[in-house]
Image (tube, rainbow, N blue to C red):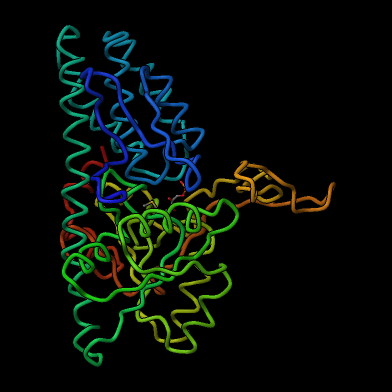
Length: 369
Ligand code: MRU
């Protein structure tokens, strides 16, 4: 997607052919800084410290981390060490394990002398595949937006609510939840996005708003507790969110607060869609609500906020009384019954076991292996 007219991806191979460039998302929206990852450890730290984040981008970064590791030590022990280091860099987003399993499966049978080159080639493919998948999500999601357009008065705006950042910054390009929005925008459809700020880390306010704004898509940032009111007053035509992991039964794990938006959408008859690339499906988890462990993150995300002061400095301030305990559950699970449909690269699916299995049979085998 574009940043002020210039095309960017969230991650790329640098001109030297081996190191990896990535947008440092911790600095947005205040500063646009590119980081250079030059080792497997750099990639692991980038994932762990959320320099990069978003399930598909975490997967792509891990793939490049494996390639960087193969330059350092392409032996079987080196392969295992890289896998073990990267796989624990973040929990929840199953794309991380998917990408590492893909890398390991392609590299294990190869002579170590050839592994580094093969690893870069496979990592490039994984990154490219993400973009292709998201184009598919865009095309399938666009049909939903077009259906709303045709039910409206000519010239009316389609209002989409989204949560967290499932935009191009969370993927290699296009995003998942935002892919249909960007395509609609490209096709000249009047689309406006309600952007949940997404406390505690504010990925909506700082990242989604930034990328939509720099690409020229109309949007409004709202406090997280506003969505229900907007839905009650007919101001949301549909909600589209991303996800970090979808269980075999169609339950959706996503950024904390997603469940509450799904409840509000259900109560108000607003369609609630989840956009996901197939590597986000975890067929090894049968029941998402019961079996997906929920990451708890540092209380500092709740107690502290960073922003720019009037004189241009970045400053972190505390907003909670000293000594008050805080809780920071990073994700929640939205039961499949609250999800209208899953927007995938192979169509809009019912959120249930049979539909997921029929659309992605090859992923079931992978989960069982
Ligand atoms: O904590 P983050 O920023 O890694 O949050 C994860 C996400 O980006 C989201 O949950 C997102 O909506 C799904 S990833 C496309």
